[in-house]
Length: 166
Image (cartoon, rainbow, N blue to C red):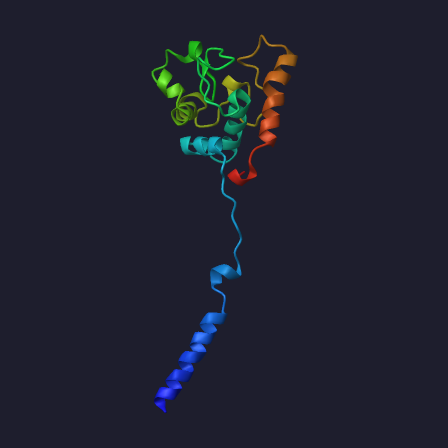
């Protein structure tokens, strides 16, 4: 009799186990994961949240995320995904051609030395809030400010891949 009772309980436990959905399957929400390589490089270099979005929009404006060098079609003396000007920065202790042509290393240098950890965007004509800062571009015309700095920046800022965060 004890054996049949144990058998009956085991059958009920087995039926309940087989028919109940696992807790994870009952309430799953698929979290989107960032697949944008440039955004991931920038995040790994230190740019987080809004700073990553700003950095991404600038990099896309400057190079469309391409690692440009001297053999690039429109070489202007600027290197890498950030288009860091060789003539302006080559004397810095952190500058090297190899670092400027490595997207992660260049982004890390830009994060630490050029943007003050993502809070200073003047070399790219912007304030931390993404408005125009003409400090380095005083000789440019309003047309150039709009068409070469602000319009491309706003375009890419709006195209930020949402799955990469806010």
